[in-house]
Length: 363
Image (cartoon, rainbow, N blue to C red):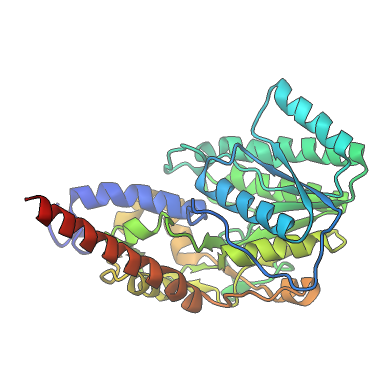
C-alpha cells in the first residue's frame, strides 16, 4: 500500500485500525482500573440493600461499573448484594432465589458480556450474549424483583449512536431513536430498546450512559498514542462522554427517585470526533491523530461504523440534571481528559525513564 492511502497508513497500521475502529463502534471506552468515588452529598443508603447485577466482572466495562457502584453504595451506608447475571445454570437460579430471600430495597442491572470478545464488522454477532442479557436477563431480574417486592429497579443502557441521525447534533430523551438501524446492528439496537421498555413498564429507571473514561489503563490510551485511532472523513460524528465517577453518582441518585423514567447520563458537551480526539491525544502527550478517508475506513471497519462515525448524534443531560439533581464533577471532556490523562502520561514517562536507567546500569 502506498504512502498516500489513508493518510500515511501502512499494512500493519490498517490491520490495527480495524480492531480499534470496531471497538470504538461498540461504544465503551474500555476501562479496567479500580473504581473511584462520587460525592452525592446529602444522600444516604443506610440500612438499604442494593442488588447489583453484573457478568463475572472480568471485563473492563463490567468491572469498572460494578466496582464503582459497589463502592458508592458502601460509602453511602448501603449493603451491596452481588448477582452474576452471566450464568445460565443452576447457580444463577440459586443466586436469584437468595436475592429474593434477602429482600433487597433496589436492583441495579449492569450486566453485559464483553469479556474476551473479538470486535468485528458485525456488531450483532459481537454483542450476541450481551443482547440476551439485555432481554432474557432483564426479564429474569424483573421477575426476581417482583417476587421480592422490589420497586426500585435501575438498568444500564447506552446513549450514543442510537438517536435518529436527522436534525440537530444533540438529542434529548424525547427525541426519536433510529427505528431502522444499520445492517448488522439491528439486534443490538432492539435489545437496548427492549431493556428500556421492560424497565420502564415495571416502573424502573433506564440510564443511557455516555462512553466511560477516567481509568489509568483505559484501552484508548495505547491506540491514540500509536496514532491508530484516526479521524474518519470529516470527523463529524458526535459522541457523548462521561467520567466514571459521574456515572456512579448518577446511578445512586437514580435509586432515590421513582420511575418510570429514562435519563441520558452524559457530560455537558457532546462533541464531534474531530474536536475531542485531538484533545485526548494532547492530554496523553501523543502526536495529533491521523485522518483516514471514508472509503478506507469503510473497507476496514464496515459501513455501519463509518456511518456512525460521520453522522451519529450526541445526547443532552438536561433532564438528568433537572430531575435527579445530578451535577457532573467533570462537566466536559475538555476538563476530564487533561485532568485524568495528563497525570497518567507523566507517570508513564517517569516509569519509562526509570526502566531506561535500570537497563543502562545493568550494561
